[in-house]
Length: 616
Ligand code: F6R
Image 1: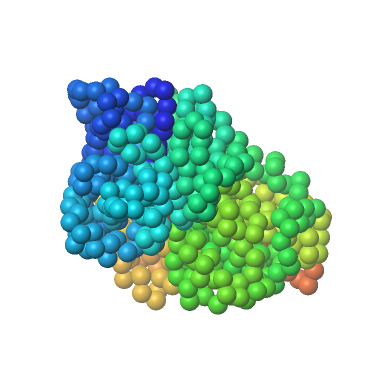
Image 2 (image 1 turned 90 degrees about the vertical axis):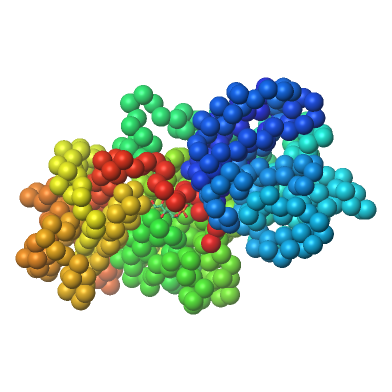
């Protein structure tokens, strides 16, 4: 995890680095720090385990040489070493020749550290990243002095693991970037040159950016020097920014990013469908990906993306009787797939290390990989055989909301289009399903309005509850899982989900007087029996469904309760399924957010979490 940024600009570097770090905070916020070259050939380093405002105060209070336009910054999600100022980046070597920020994990850090200490290096932190500083120092002062570029090249040859590294030389202010299995983007504009983990950090000052590939080394400055395989090469093609940087700040009437992103869901789905729908019933959405025929589908992902993946996998089964599975990416090592399996890797960020590792582990015998991601320039997108953009726009809140609905709708369109292309679903049948999908924005809009009306009282009534259950049957189970995930990550209260039928096999023991039990209603009659079992043990049932439920977000049509269910009959008697009661996720997002606010939590940055999980 962690976010890094560097710049060489004509104005003071902190004017860029601090807002960039603010934008990168979603990658981790355990500590933050910058190192800025001064006009007299020294470096000013400020670090804090508090938020960015602390750095501003420290920089304002400093005296001495003027700050230049060259600097590097880091926002940390702790992996090695406690959350202390000493462990905050940037780090330096023994004599302060270089300052370094690092995103990733150096897996052989302990071995390197022991070796460097034996050679006389003095470490001042407990983090793996510090070995990078001393390895570079070793080369810079060693007999084979090959300059800063050579020192960085020989340093990374010693590293195992993953890294995006920025190195700033104190005496010259030269700034290099290099990467291996971690994202880094480079951009130039009238404001200067920038390098960052994510384009959101530098979006206000650029219109296009270039993506660094594994092994690239770039020296920031005029001209930009791009080195690959030890030789200088032309920089890769620049990609344009496809969204406005206004996405990155809150407007006066936005309560927080999560609140804004929940509210954006109807228009997000509207935009996705206006782009995809015309190509679904023709089969073109699938054909344009250029992927080969497949017999089976495996969708892999983590967290919320895995939940979306379960719905997408189910859609392949329901539309085309395709054998399907959803794979927890971090456990993919044990999964056996064959070459006729289409692997759909679902990841909002496209940088999730568990997903990238899963693709490595599935190499043997796996079929083609399709990335379903919100970041078309991500590592996942570059490693996949095909890419489908879930087009949610930047999501800043750490908890995934609008990207979940975007993944579900995009993935379901993909499944339907693939089945039309192979002739399993007729065009007229697909049209009927697409027509139903086109009502999704209205359903979400209605769900937001209804939830805002009903959720506040529910929040009051469950404020002191320490544990929650989420139940569903059929398509509702995945939504129950997503609701429980949102509640625990936002409120820090225990929440578990179960297929409702499982309750009597153990979890019912958890239900006591007042235990909140959120139920995703369905037309399955057995669900009411399960709910009755909860009620008779004193459970406080909060039902999400049609009229008469505690939060009536689903329209009255009983069909709507099982929208996973029959839209029409296909050849061979297949039943068609779309995405289940998608709008039922809305009240659970709003419940989690409002309860979190009532409990004084930071809803955009829940504790211990980060949005882009680049460690395993
Ligand atoms: C939950 C959440 C996480 C992510 C998970 C995967 O709200 O945001 O569970 O869904 O870390 O991240 P991506 O989708 O970037 O691979």
